[in-house]
Amino acid sequence: MDAVSAEGVRVIAIDGPAGSGKSTVARRLAERLGLEYLDTGAMYRSVAFAAMAREVDLADSEAVVELARTSDIRVEDTSVIVDGVDATTQIRGPEVTRSVSTVAAISGVREMLRVRQRAWVMERGGGVLEGRDIGTVVFPDADLKVYLSASAHVRAARRAGEVSALDYETVAADLAARDAADSSRQHDPLAQAPDAVHIDTTDLSVDEVVDDLIARLG
Ligand code: CDP
Image (cartoon, rainbow, N blue to C red; front, side, top):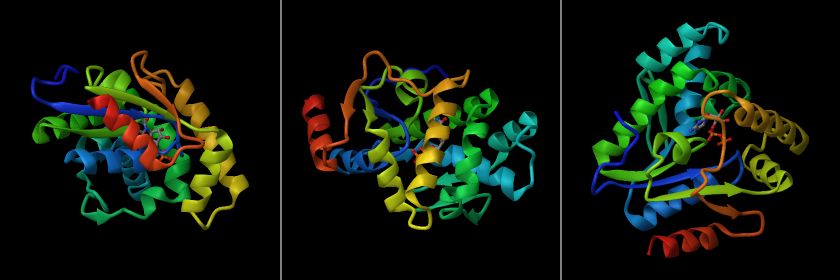
């Protein structure tokens, strides 16, 4: 399928690094607009989870692509089910978090998930999608493209607050490593689309960001 949003389909693309506020903003914006919300990072995390569960070596890209093609991945609002197993907690755990950028760097995996993401939108007639390449690659013709950022310190502090088992230093180091991998990979790296609205959320509340986006939609 072409990366073109069909007529009447309302797509909002939100990209940015970890801890920039994407998930919270995307979820609240979707609620306010009466649209559904898709966390595409959860899909990449689900493939990393499936590889872990099936003991697939991440260096074997063909095997990982096959998992992306065949795994039954259900990303719902509050749960993620992978091949019938509730992976909601584990996909956010340290093991998946450390391996997900390797999985996401495989172009075949991206291709498989991109197809699923576009199908998800077409089935619903639109939606709010958040990730790393939504405005640049998955929906370059989205009705609104947003790139969220925040200082490295604030992003790590937000994430450390969410994952209470990990200390700030560990989270900050993991985030920096993941940012570097996601921004420098060959295929669909994390990048701001030239026509995306850039919002630095360092000193903004979620509602301030969402109000700003709603105003832009007119
Ligand atoms: O929640 P957080 O921002 O920490 O990460 P995530 O959105 O769950 O995404 C996890 C990982 O999936 C990222 O670090 C990227 O490697 C990958 N990803 C991607 O490559 N493309 C997307 N559209 C979404 C996520």
